[in-house]
Length: 626
Image (tube, rainbow, N blue to C red; front, side, top):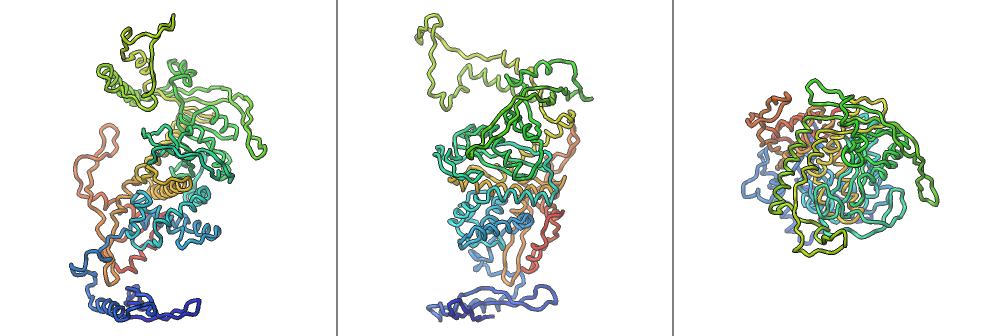
């Protein structure tokens, strides 16, 4: 039916709004209600009333003729119509976690406090970018092109609004992380007795490092210094400028906080930058930081011990740093072995000289003061047969490549600064430069070095300040570090956090905040799944497959969530664990994963057709089991 509603504006103007509506019942035996099928704007704003009313009447007549409850339209009307557009509703599951964490309330409060005057909602932009990052990770420009691809998601903003919003996201870069920590602690009972820390880097699409800039540091001071994108040692062997990110995780593998640093900063220096804010802002009295050998430097150890914290770090055994452990390493006394003989370990106590570090503030600057002290720590030396075999196999491959390079120089390609180095051979006695015809340079394989490296095959060391830890406890705590490596993989691969396309410091930090929030949501879903948890890739795959069509008559047609054949799992002969085989299973992998997700969120909705009211009620019931 056609409705005419009078609307009075603030200036006293009265206009007539024209809508085509239809009646419906929200549920059986309920009172009838009306919903808008299409709004045609205000009658007084129309320039051609005859054409306007023809359009309104045509819409109303087509609605009267519509009697198919499934909402099917003739073939000639289907292409390029709103009723034929595929809409994703799978995002509703992570969106429910977004709401559970109260992120919408946090951003709306910020918007009110900051006096934001934009015509768009910061929360809508942030929520959209987080959901799109989980399902279809890509650039901000590509994300904006998908604004119409989600069922029921408000998206009253454009690409320029997204870039403007990134500046505001940077303003609550640290505050939102603290807020999320409080919510996650409330929901999961998070304990930060152990905090796992590591650093990785993300490459950009720039050719050159950014120039120095003026920015606001963590203490709110205006600082002039190097930009974030700098040339450094890329862990993915990229030659473009990179950006470092340090990440803290809790024992459940759920992110606690993160920060970004310039690409040429040493990994070990990032812990110093992160630790002070991590403890003060999160109200942590004492924590044991677990990290790999990249964080293991004397300054970090002194800093942790001076603050009353502990550490569990891996330790190199080769070179000058590992020299002090060689005697114990190759001494046959004191070693313990497993029943199979595949694992051996030795636990020793070591006294070492450290420094007590304190900071004195002068003229707003913090000056570091040191005092030498003696400390004790435990060192776990262990050997693994599987790791020894792997190391030997890798070295054998390197020796083969080295041998081939001596013959045809195929593996002697120079990179970077080496291209511009010049080498001359002289007589030591006189310093005379020899002519090229007088000398011959040859490359040989260094077998002696290979033999020395073979002595360390399968050996590892872990050092800890926790004197009450035994060998099993040290290994168990350190083993939890694999979760942070998995989180980095999720960030880089599943959330596609790199390459980084944005340029300014504010936009870069906002980009990482979006990725961090998406990672928290994915980890919360996995945590709720328990031992049956799905990988981030499988979660995103089945959520992307949850699509629907809006059909006339107020119906929603849900498409099948499936289409990927599952492989049968059989017990591994060595470990007994179930592993995928080459045989097909009669079950569908996506369908099974989607059932598990619905179970995790406490829902059970598998209808192919549903009224929009019932479908919306299904969304309101979605929530993580706690």
